[in-house]
Length: 63
Image (cartoon, rainbow, N blue to C red):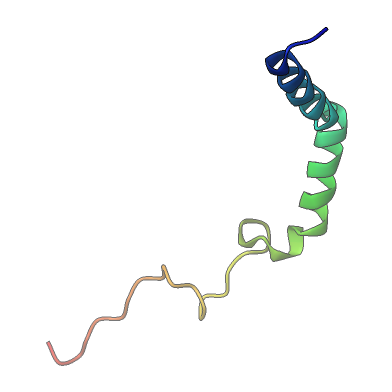
């Protein structure tokens, strides 16, 4: 007969085992996500100079 603590611990272990993912499956999912979203990645597609917030600012002509 299992104690209440043992039953609770056993159920937690079972839930964790259900959530396990094979590394190969996780890698395949990550690769698929990256390939599907590559066109949104500014490191791959580049940034337009007109929309780049990090471009050098123009000098103010009033100074």
